[in-house]
Image (cartoon, rainbow, N blue to C red; front, side):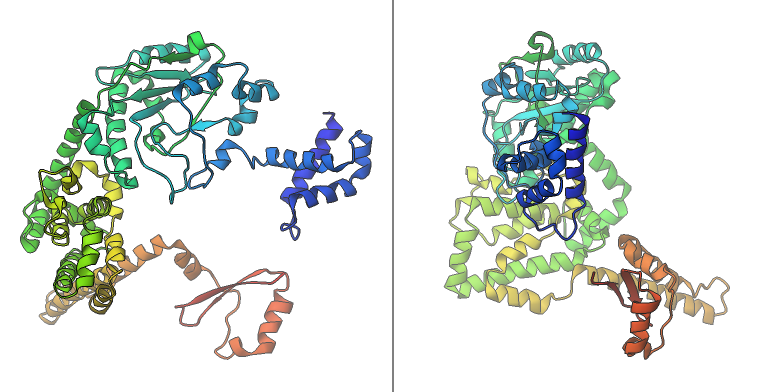
Length: 551
């Protein structure tokens, strides 16, 4: 294009970006109006003014704003459907100079940056055709990807790829290629999916469980690669531990130097997983030792035999919205209530037979509830399973729902787990919903706040007694200090509260001014006629309203 033509298209994109009241206008109609408003410029540039021009402009806008790019179309939780591709088709596409990737690069004179977002992606670790969380399948392929970034120039990058291609004791790549950027490389590993250990670990296809088990193998393998290749250990992009992550495909111009492939090579699965589990086990033992006194207290007060269960419950109890005693009591009583109902109501009995004889439901609930309550949750769930079910037979394969292990949980994710999905399920029974709402309407966060205030007040009473006894070490302000610290923590979690509280008011209104039409009209229409956003805070400071002037 001439410089004049380029400027005209840039103006089109700029006008489209800055459109205001016309935002609801159809894109083609917008392009048609742009042609009418700039007819002379288009004629001078020798454009045909027929209907094809507005379609060309629409396509240009799509390219400029990347409406149909791979990167945008398959963003997280997008409902676009991808195509399945075999490994041989994949290799064909990234190495054939006549295929789509090479042709795409040719349109940009080989400039990867210009068309990078339009390059195809693959999801190597999952058998799924979408990233829509509602439809996404979490069936693991047994493949893992490592991304080495910013290695150096092309020669340095190829040299390092060749070194890492040789693998380590347990990590042996079966495919490697230079990244689209040219200064990094991708490493694909595969494990034998027919082995019992892999089948047992990934038989459950629940999102959270599959993600954690994927990370266990990935992290152990990454450490082994880092240990064997310390010079580029920091160049491994750890974001690839997310099995939902997409891998960008390049065009490989020189297959002899920029590409490696041997489908017969497999990495170890069991040995790598066991090493990571052992590492996590030692870390956990040290953490328990650091909180030994509190762990013992939790064990004694709740009749828990496992130190690990007690420690995990202790961590949950320390979170802002989880009260240990309250949640354990609620969970056990709800299970007992359901069991009692099933003995007197055939409908509830049949409901349990349908729901808690399902391997999928049990596996999902046990994963979440074990993460919250530990092994006690498994014992409670067993009470809801029909006595004749093979889900209670330890020698049957369907008993795997109960085989949960602490090593298979991510610590940060575990802190976020709640029994909410269990209550959502059992609320299908109307009497259970009424029972819970009637007996446990107070939440964990309410209990936690009450306990904190009560503890602070007990300290206040203690200091009050000291003061009355003429003791010099009495601190009567300790009560308010603790309450203020708690409130400050809440403000940090909701920074808008602090901002609004500390904001200096431009105008202080009297008690009746809010209802005085003349006063308010003078503020909005005269004094602050140029303002669009207003913040009103009540006199007591407990409520606030943000108003926006209607344009």
